[in-house]
Amino acid sequence: MHEVFRHWDTATVGLLNNLLQDAGVPTILQNWDGCNITEIPIPAIYPTICVAKEEDCKRAKEIITAFQKHSTPSAGEWTCP
Image 1 (cartoon, rainbow, N blue to C red):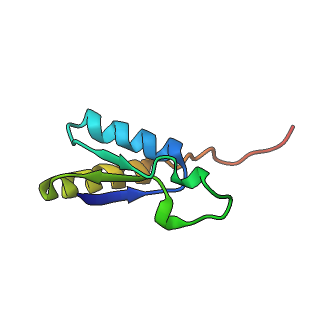
Image 2: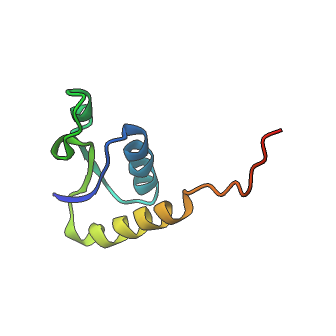
């Protein structure tokens, strides 16, 4: 198994996991409930997305990188009324 993504937020991990699966990359989730064990952030128990085959790593990381580049909202200038 090869880790391709780790994050404290299960919503982010779940979204990326679904994107990878929709793209045909088989994934395995680990530590899904790990971040709920303690209030202290421990990266070793953050939810993790893994792929079983090494040849899927590159494609998975490309999909994750593309998501991260385009997921930052740009609302522009804001003036409070």
